[in-house]
Amino acid sequence: MRTLLAIPVYNEEKYVPRVIALALQYADDILVVDDGSSDRTPQLIAHYPVDAIRHGVNRGYGRSLRDAFSIAACRGFDWVITMDCDEQHEPRLIPTFLAEARSDRYDVISGSRYLREADARDNPPPDRRAINAEITREINERLALNLTDSFCGFKAFRVSALARLRLSEDGYAFPMQFWVQAAAAELRITEIPVTLIYNDPTRTFGGPLNDAGQRLAHYRNVLHCELERCASRLPAAALSGVSAGCGCGTP
Image 1: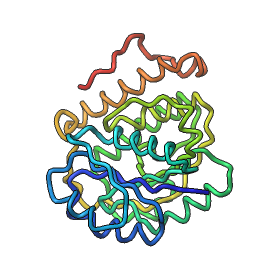
Image 2 (image 1 turned 180 degrees about the vertical axis):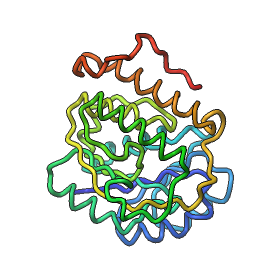
Image 3 (image 1 turned 45 degrees about the vertical axis):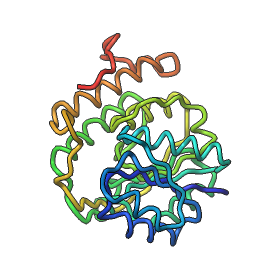
């Protein structure tokens, strides 16, 4: 089983050395996707035996993930594990994802910071926890899933299963599109507990998404648009209350 560890980064000079050094203890093949960093992140990445691609400008978290998926497929990997570079995801848990992948029971193994509350080390900003809970509830109701954390970026994906999806979302709303398409494609999904860590609760999303109300509206808009697109492969109940022609512009 060949596995690629993909780490999206954007201005992470504070964390890059520690995160990559730890990740190399658990993964042989690492791809760092630099999303147009303007700090010393690119120079620091170059000190480590990892592959790296760089966006000339900031293109978004979702685009970084999609690029990692494409490279994993082109290079013949069986699985791709994604983790963030801000020390909110612990490399020591990579073997747990690998063990679940080897069981061959799932196509998506998603980390959850809320599956086992005792694992919490920090408290997330209240608006982030509230939006996560609201969107997760709606995803579960519409797609008949049983998620506890729809936004966690610490995941393992079966590469052949990703080939059945047509992902296009570039930004932070990527999970909304992903979960709808995963359900429509009948991918096998499970969650495993990961530690809840928030080292820097002051970090922002940038632009209008810094406003919690606009962020929630944007996430819901992308979710509803994707429900419309996948309507023919979803139960009618998934579309209940979704207005036709919702449009998918940013807030």
